[in-house]
Length: 249
Image: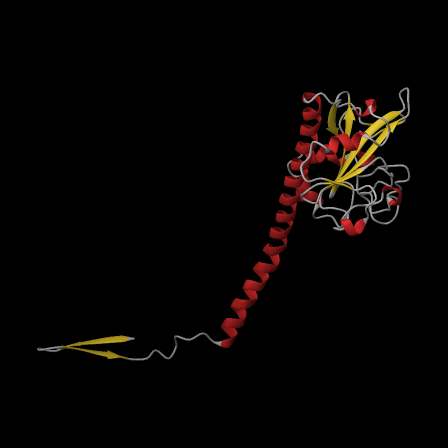
C-alpha cells in the first residue's frame, strides 16, 4: 500500500506492507486442483487428435505412393497389371520404383520385416480384436519402405476368374502395435486397372465381396476379414481416424 503526504517543500512517501497480499495454502491447492481437472479433460483429447492426424497423414501418403508406382510402371513400359507377372514376382518390379526400399525376402522381425507364412499368428488382428487367420494371405512378397511402412503383397494368379491382388499397408511397421486391420493396417486392391481401397464397390474375392462394411468394418463383426473394408472409410470419411483411435482393443 502506498500513502502520499504533501508538504510545502517536499513530498514524503510512506510504504506500508499489505499483510493480505499472499495466497493461502488452501487457495494454492484449489488452483492446482482446477488445473489438474482441466488437464485431465483436455490432454487425452489432444493425444487422440495427434494420433488421428498422424495415422490419417500416413494413410494418404502410403496410398499416394502405391498409386504413383502403378502409374510410373505403366509410363516406363512395365506392366502395371499384377496378373501379367508370375506369382510372387510382381512385388519385385513394384519395389524397383521406390527409393531405399528393403525386400523382406529372407528377413525377419529383427529387420522390421515379417515372414508371411507366420502371418496367421498373434501379430495381426481383425478390427474386433480376434487373431487374423492369414493362412495363404500376403505370402507373395513384402517391402519395407524408408519411413517404416511395411507393404504385404497378395498376388494370386488362379486362372479364370479366380485371381486377386491385394496390398496391405502396415503404416507403422510390424514391431509397432496394435497391428489391427482398420486401425494401423489398411488393404488396397488392384481392380479393373486401378488400385482402390478395399470396401470400395466390387472389391473382395470372387466368392466373397468386401463391400458389406457391417462385416468388414465393424467392431462387433467376427468375420476374418473384418477391418479390410475400413480402407474405404479411411479414404472418404474425414472423421474416421478420430473415431478409430478412441476405440479400445
